[in-house]
Image: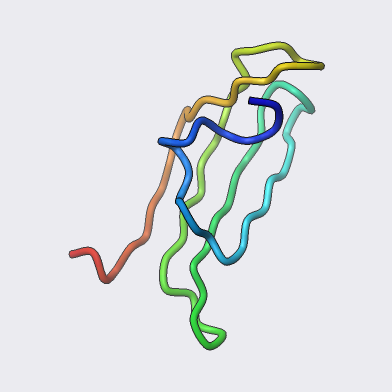
Length: 73
């Protein structure tokens, strides 16, 4: 994968998706949110590390994750 995380670490259909690089090509923070009528329904924040090439084929893996899904309980 070039710039996205492995599929099992990502939500299938986020309304908002931000990526902030901590050290380009090596580590980043990924934020995904589900929004309805301007209200946040759920969110995921995770630290990801690239185990692939720094420039070229990247392979982002989850290091730490916090999920907030109030309707899933």
